[in-house]
Image (cartoon, rainbow, N blue to C red):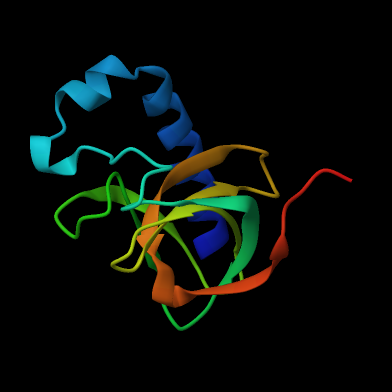
Length: 124
């Protein structure tokens, strides 16, 4: 089974879980609370940045910019494209991944060091 197929299944599950909203967030520890973007601590990227995953192995998604908040089973792999919307001052990016195969998306936080900016996302 390929990593991309596994990711497509996981992304689909994440979207279904996201639809449950309150149930998922009610079980999230307080230390995993997502910070408010657009502040001096987590500035917005305007326009958002197109990125590609670099390095080797899986890049784990987190529900908040905290190593103790992994989104179990949700990850991307090298060369996958992400859109970054905000970055913390300590090396985290708020991103969205859109599966080219299914069209499903997942949003979360990843370590910025594994991202390479390839351009910007802006209206034409």
